[in-house]
Length: 376
Image 1 (cartoon, rainbow, N blue to C red):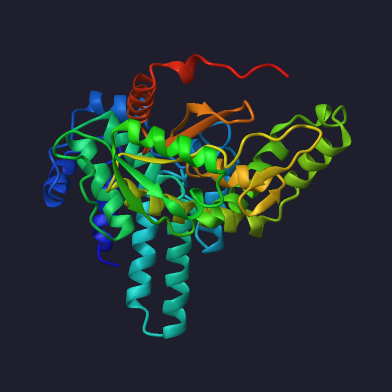
Image 2: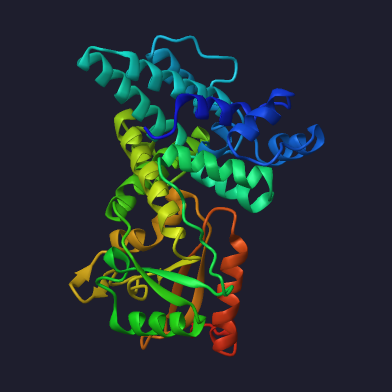
């Protein structure tokens, strides 16, 4: 682990209420001087609270099941959870302690156990939300907060992050061929490639490891969250299929959700690297036009397919990773149905999406943005 345990403790301390020692900690880490108490309150109390729960729970609130789950991790290690178990400072301090125990242990099997505990903390309780949090912090506040957020993410990822801005101020569009440009209707592909050219962004060919796992992980997460979000008194009023899907989602085994969260953490980590080399990601919103109700099959180059899996494959990544996205109208299929190009941006950088969408709309004279398919 390149970063020492003391680095993680210092980074955690700097998101706690101001203390005279913080100036020395910031200087030791090569960061600008910490802000005053009023700025700290504005950033860490009112805008971006350093707790896991708001970023992992469907309601975005402090405490609740998300915080309870973190507390359960402390108990699994036979530790008493602190009063705020999901606070970033507490999690970073725990991460440092586990790293120290791993390093000090002379028995290989025990060292391996501490290593697995540290990795579980990293993948299940830190990387599931910290990348989004640090990107939002970078966009919110320059100076100390931006530098602190960048160093925190670099320490957790154990690598230095490249600068993502082009020196000429232009946009670069990341093109992930596999799986998002594969098995795409020819007209959809042509319209999206034309829109990408109209965007005027320099294309950057990228690979996104584990992208093929986004669909199953997203389906597990969405099903579990939806299954517990619908009031029980309403479930009985639903049609049998909807009721069955909700109940199935609510009964997801815990191990399946843990695996889905590990995939989400890994994808967020890969997205951090991807956005280090481009400002936007781009691929078709759907692989083919929507099929008619009487024959609900997509016509793909590989052959007819039920719509759910291909559509989820194209759309689920933004929901699972929590990055902002937009679907931009880019034309009409010969079937008369619209075609969209999906743009994704890093956490907290919605302005890039609006800029990209505006460029495409301006290049087409606005004809796709205001057009509508003929009613059946």
